[in-house]
Image 1: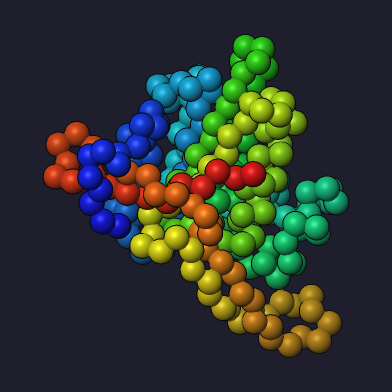
Image 2: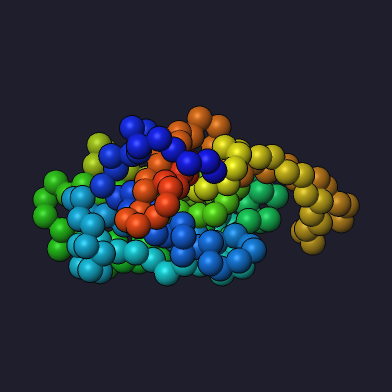
Length: 217
């Protein structure tokens, strides 16, 4: 994405960590990578007691049951009513699945120690916007947090730095459990229509970096 005039730079206090995470992800090379920044009451220390930065996860590191949408016996956590089955199955090992699980595990372990009225913000940072299936997972994750912290105390955001705000791709996928055994084309959209451009200039960098940000609702 292009350089941004100084007057357009974001005032988001988490922008340095977001920009650094994007830079770290870019060093991983080709493929889909993501991480989550978990901030409790605005804490930016990432000391793993008051805020947490998950490891960077790559594609095919997912598959955990909580956010797979496919490998669960709990009907309330399945793909049904959220996204098409083919979308859920195609993306069940995407990096976001592992990242959301990692973030949830940290929150679940520590949330009882947080003060009453705690607010939480989770930014899922990736080099590619979430696909249709992972958008549904982000919504489920947000609802999990609302159930813990209450309405009005949760912000979940997606950040990515592709050149386009969103892009739709068609894939041919064959699933063994289809009765016909035929091949179907699955269309999925990466990124969010309606995302906004944010920009930050890291200290010593020759120019600012910009990225897309979308608040999950």
